[in-house]
Length: 114
Image (cartoon, rainbow, N blue to C red; front, side, top):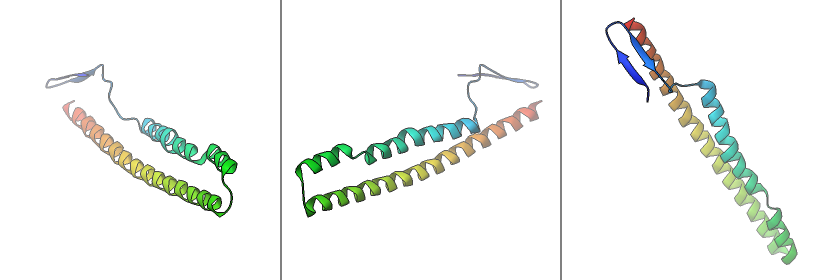
């Protein structure tokens, strides 16, 4: 935790470890996207084992119907993931904006104390 000292003339922040980095927030959002959204989509799209099992023991219209339903289900889940990503980005953008506003206000208050 940073230690703050404030007197009439000076304010110092020793060992401060807080602050907002716009590039850091962007990197964080992209890392979330890569690890959660893209990773999950890759897992969903890898249907090789399912396809092999179906090919080994299933024929006819039921097989085609199942594969069509599987593809539609995967698409629905991917669309839901895309919507969640969009919502998460919006929330993180708001959070970042709030942090930046708070930092700007703190900077102004520090400048006014000088």
